[in-house]
Amino acid sequence: MKRSILISALLLSQFGTSQLLKTSGQKIVNDRDENIRLRGLGLGGWMLQEGYMLKTADFAGPQFKIKEKIAELIGEDGMNNFYKAYLKNGITKQDIDFLKKAGFNSIRLPMHYNLYTLPIEKEAINGQNTWLEEGFKMTDDLLKWCKDNKIYLILDLHAAPGGQGNDANISDNDKSKPSLWESEENQKKTIALWKKLAERYKDEPWMGGYDLINEPNINFTGKNPNGTDEMSNAPLWKLQKDITEAIREVDKNHMIIIEGNGWGNNYNGLIPIWDNNMAFSFHKYWNYNNEETIKFALDLREKYNMPIWLGETGENSNVWFTELIQLLDKHNIGYAFWPMKKIDNIAGITNVKITPEYQKLLDYWKNGGEKPSKEFATKALMVIADHYKFSQVEIKNDVIDAMFRQTKDNSTKPFKNHQAPGKIFATDYDLGRMDFAYNDQDFINLWVSDPAKRSEWNSGNQLRNDGVDIYQSKDKQYYVGKTDKGEWLQYTIHSKTDKAYTFDINYASNKSGKIRIEDASGILLTNISLNPTGGNENWKTISTKEIIFKKGENKIRIYFENDAINLNYFELR
Image (tube, rainbow, N blue to C red):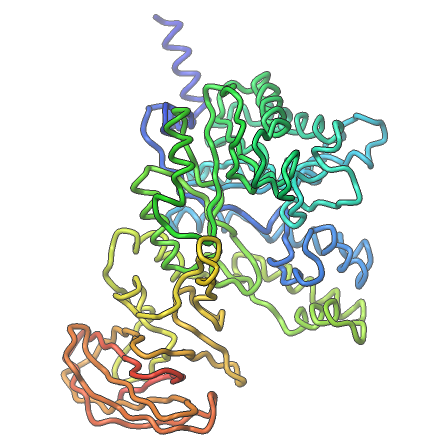
């Protein structure tokens, strides 16, 4: 009895609050067998950059090509200094504290193997594994910050040695060198890396699991280069089984997560399940949020009596995010959204602000012309690295609201504290679901399910991630544009007293139009006729008759009765 008590005490001290994740039938649970819904975020853009995250996709997609472009301007040492600052600033304890406060309970870490070990061609001895402290130190720090916040950390090998597919941007794949599948040495290094990681973190309760190979996309026997038509996937299942066996030599505790071919979703030819603490991952982008689009994953869960996890999703509108999470909640499926930080980002929870100097570098890399000086380029790049600090990024509260509050609540909230009298910018409409806070014709991107429904949702790609189209004018002001008949915007305004206010509308349009203003219950407040202003950014102000506001909170809606009216602001006086 005394021995069992001592063992229990040891386990509790070792695993803290006894939160170690494991699988139980079709659920992911903790040590108390409580169902755990992983509400997570992937730290895309930190250890591994894809070109679109740095706006280099047109000329440099994989990370190694981005590094080549940077070294061309500031030299190899300068490039290394930039990445040192970039990695230092990219994720800090402040970021993880913020994620916890926002509502996330887990993090997926996309790892680049070259932060942990040398490429096979750089090993002094063939078959040797030289371990690099940088990646392990970054992971140690991240895990500590997660533990402090009671957040699970899931390791994801995003860039495997040699690259795991033909989509080079995802895994930083240099196709002039042997891929993961063409090189036994790369496969052995991959297995050794996972064993090293498992040995290091085997006793960590807030280590949520090991996502073995991100988005394999390779044609072993099929015709599709990304493996979507593969029927056996034999090399993929063999390697993931070999990795699992190596992990289990040192770590019997942590959950293993496997992914299929074709960017994670092709599970054809799956061999008998080789571990009793394993989950399936699938990925979901740019399709409908209905049972049909996740049926293959639900069928996997049922057939094998194993949990499923949406390991990567995102890059869509707030409407899509809310609908997706509601669907996942219905089926008890956890998720990790993507990514954490990128430049000019409206579809994520943070935005890294671009600078004119960095744009000049992008223009040179894309179009040529006069080469920026080393001094200019160094300064521009180091400023961008500084912009990755949490203190410098822009928090996208509309995205966070859509991911958490709006999934359960259709009420609206003020985007800002609007007061009457006062000026209110059109872009500062209420937070909330579509048809409650606003209405727009294009509000979601479904190009995988229905190519005809490819949409930029916010076609101006500025400020907010709803369907409302927001643009930046020549004088750097933001306005609502590309309006269509029937669309509307709602604003919550606080009036200090009962009062009849004059309503000034600042707008631009190439043709005549009309708007009407109602309260949120549908009572008409006024109709306004708008004359052409002579240009889409040729702004004109028109005043209306007085509109009565009651003391306290008032909700009004501005309806567009025809298209092509650009709205800058309105003022109550």
